[in-house]
Length: 160
Ligand SMILES: NC(=O)N[C@@H](O)C(=O)O
Ligand code: NI
Image 1 (cartoon, helix red, strand yellow):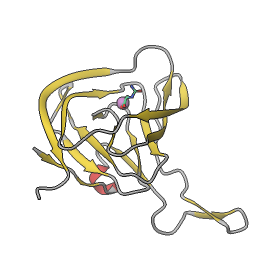
Image 2 (cartoon, helix red, strand yellow; image 1 turned 135 degrees about the horizontal axis):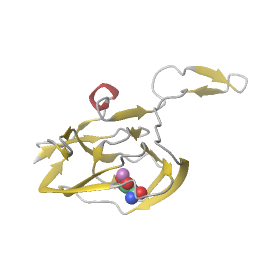
Image 3 (cartoon, protein in one colour; image 1 turned 90 degrees about the horizontal axis):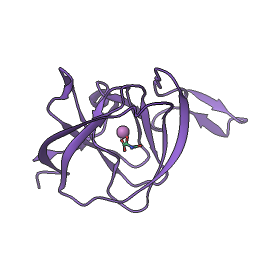
Image 4 (cartoon, helix red, strand yellow; image 1 turned 90 degrees about the vertical axis):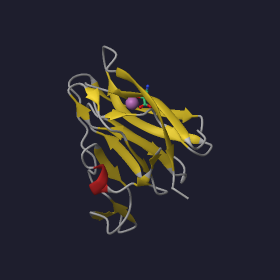
């Protein structure tokens, strides 16, 4: 059983970026009526181009069982929730081309993530309906997908 930890930029740094509107904005724009949290994610594509898609994903129940991790060798992948619902993020370090020990995070409402290119992760895992997300990732040739079956593990939100 893996207990999901609150998502923080520092905790997630080995895997990707956390984007949100917390703290002071980097810029005030639009006559001071809008805070811009500027350039908060490192997009990276080996070729092709960046594309924006909308995902409508089925919510999962907890405890969540994961038996597959994947990664995108040719590009980063950002998941930007279109609701205030928290969602589950499962990632793992690479160990000689295979996923190492997985880690799970639970987002706070309003947090978005950008998985760095090649980061092992579980597929998008909403916990509440609607599971609506804007997704920014690579549009290009080839599958840009490496999947790895893992020994099934379960994820829960807290030990309580
Ligand atoms: N398949 C797809 O576009 N999405 C996955 O990569 C995912 O991480 O959810
Ligand atoms: Ni993915």
